[in-house]
Amino acid sequence: MTTELGYWKAVLAGLRGPRVPIIPFVPQQLLTPTRILQVDSAWKGIESILADLIARFHLRTNRCLEFGVEFGYSTAALSAFFDSVTGVDTFRGDKHTTNKKDVYDETVRRLSPFENVQLIRSDYRDWIKADTNSYDLIHVDIVHTYSDTFACGLWSASHSPCVIFHDTESFSTVRRAVIDVAKISKKRFYNFKGSEGLGIVI
Image 1 (cartoon, rainbow, N blue to C red):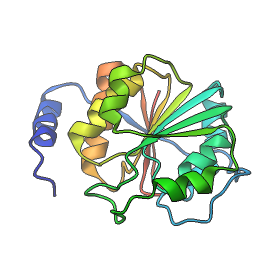
Image 2 (image 1 turned 120 degrees about the vertical axis):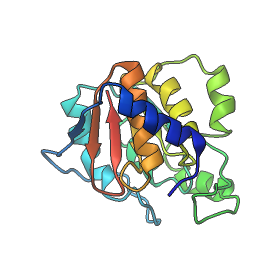
Image 3 (image 1 turned 90 degrees about the vertical axis):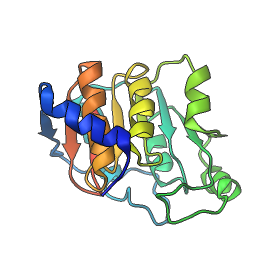
């Protein structure tokens, strides 16, 4: 149970306003991408729904931005579908990750065979202050607080037609942030229950 004040304020505000429907996302097909890294990841399983997600929502596949790379599992999977993937991370973990060491160098080496991947060592807060680009899809998997997920997610929803959020099933703070991002951006919230949950705001 979180003690984060922003989360509880958002929950109370949500009780007074119109509810955001959470639409189940049930993939019609599973397709393993050509790029799978042999590393531990809670993202395992999501890579197989990406092709279905892209096709169902008619997404372009030119540019993808990812907040939260860690060991690169999701980055590699996304790079199998998008012409260009930019991964932004501090690469030092956070209070919700098991790993606390600096993994930048090893992640760069691991993803080096994929020429369409660019890794940037940066806090998401610094990145969103300067980036004015638009993307075909943005993936948010950062520290799982309400305030951080909401801030990063709301910026992302204004810079991409589709934003996906990991851990909507394992963190109530993430789910609440995704609900509020969908509400403010006037988009729909789909949720895939597998692999700790993937919220899709489109």
